[in-house]
Image (cartoon, rainbow, N blue to C red):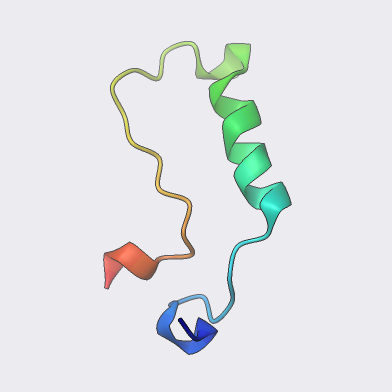
Length: 46
C-alpha cells in the first residue's frame, strides 16, 4: 500500500505505536476502559 493512501502521507513509526502501548500500560490510562485505540495514521478513517 503506497503511503499516499494514508491521510497523514506517511506510515507510522514503530516508536509511535510503542508510545501508544506505553500510555495504555501506564498509570495515566487507569480510567481508560473498553476502548480501541487505532494507531494507523488515519488510514481506517477514510
